[in-house]
Image 1 (cartoon, rainbow, N blue to C red):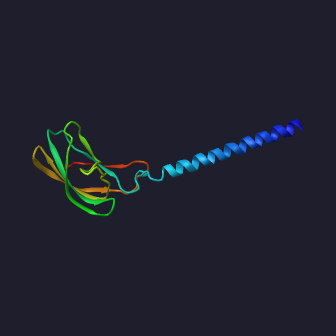
Image 2 (spheres, rainbow, N blue to C red):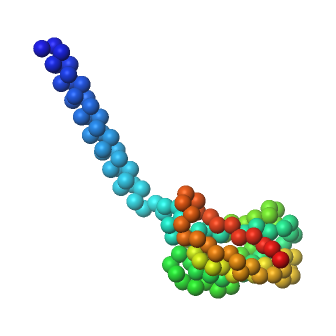
Image 3 (cartoon, rainbow, N blue to C red):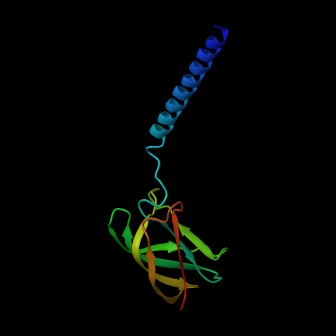
Length: 135
């Protein structure tokens, strides 16, 4: 009898742990519902370019809602050779998808246009797509 009592206690503990695990899993699923999964609505654009003193770009393409954005100006970071375009002036995020056109301006002079940057919607576990300046 003592053995069967231990067995019942062990089974009860396993059932209790399973119930607690299921509850934790369902709670995490509910809390994660509002989080934007990476790579599902487009990508943040990362621009790479040569060393500059000052620069900016005009970007045209589609945003995550399918709206055409034309000649949106972004300042480039002169301290690094890359700038990640993430936040709008209104505080929202820039998510891009599809073919992009980027007009580059370095040190107040037109440096060229990049037309071969095609931002893929889903890149798995990342949320950025790199487009590089080239002549």
